[in-house]
Length: 88
Image 1: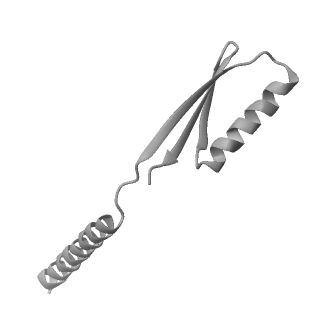
Image 2: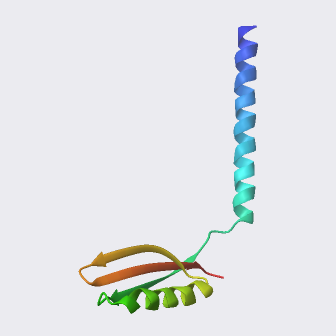
Image 3: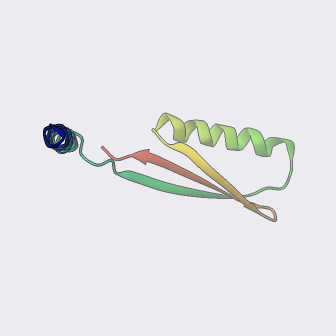
C-alpha cells in the first residue's frame, strides 16, 4: 500500500513536470526575444531657466519616436540621458 502511494506521488510529479516543460517550450516559440535599440544624450547644463524647457522639448520629440528614458547620470555639469526603444 505504501509503495502504491509513493509511486502515485512520483507519477503525478513527473506528469506535472512534463506539462510545465511542454507549456514553456510552446510559449517561448510564440514569443521571440525582445531586441532593443539604445541612445545616449549628453548635455552640458549652464543652469539657466531655459535648460529644462529645452530638454523637455527634446525628450518629448524622442518619446514621439518611441524612445523611453530609462536612466540619468550626472557628472559635474554634464548629464547623460539613456534611452531605449524596441526594435521592429
